[in-house]
Amino acid sequence: MRYELTRVVFEEQRVLEVTESEFRRGQHAKIVLSESLFAEERFSILLENYEDFERELLALALKDVLFESSGWSDRIDDLHLLNRRLTNLLTMCRVYVDHTPQTLTTIFGAGAQEADEFRTATAEEYDAHLGYRAMEALRNYVQHKGLPIHRIINRGKWTVGRELLEHIVVPGLDVPLIRAVGGFKATVLAELAALEQPVDVRGLTRDYITCLKRVHGKVRDLLTPAAEAADQVMTEFVDMWTDGAATPDLTGLELLQRNDDDTVADRVAIVFEISKRRKYLIHRNRLAGDLTKQVVTNKLKLE
Image (cartoon, helix red, strand yellow):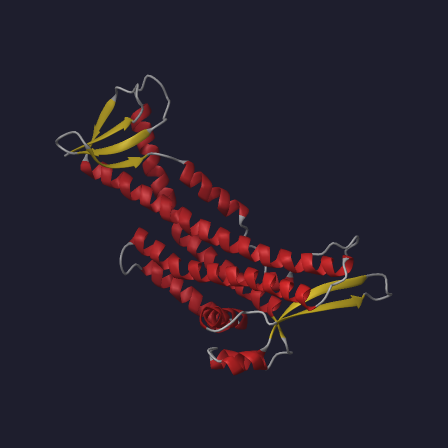
């Protein structure tokens, strides 16, 4: 068995011998970078599903302003649309919560403290926020019993001075219906029963996503040192290759593990696109702000 660093392109003749230890370092660095990216990708898809849900609410409010409903079937179509959006969001939130500890374990090892810190963070959010408890229970209800939204309420209200008629769409959760169907966590259902009925799903959703944003901030804090160290390992291999190279071209640069018969047993691509993508997503998917205290409006003037 031997280990080497080379460009896997037809015209390349140069091959650098590396140690098994160096190959394993590169191998682990690639795993760290890939898993760190997967964590950001999951969170990005989560936010995109939340964006879809909120956008649909705005679109339905505008539709209510411009067009006359042709009847019950139109309203049911709108209800199904919102159920589809919210179900997608709840599913992706569950994927994020379930898969992130696996990412941390893959990077830091079995029994890693980092995975325990993630579970502690989610447990703290669960205990502190009804939105988290309600949406987790609702996700389980959707999986086993029924749809998350039971009615749509279209509301309009004049602003002070009757200058503007504001339109909103409220997705409602029917507590008596859920109680009749069963399969919803009793303690959380009691909390929801104490709210104005039907329960406005928007506030619960915004609270839940805000909780997950805070959790993901901690995930980033855990992953960043490991990802930066992995970046440095990749840079070291690039420096090793470019030192004395006839051309700085890095196309196809890989670590190879070869068997005695010269066949390739394993390979590690030396690439920076993974890290660039992760940093792009971190920059794009901002964590600042409590979504329960923010609203998107199209008013001509902000009061």
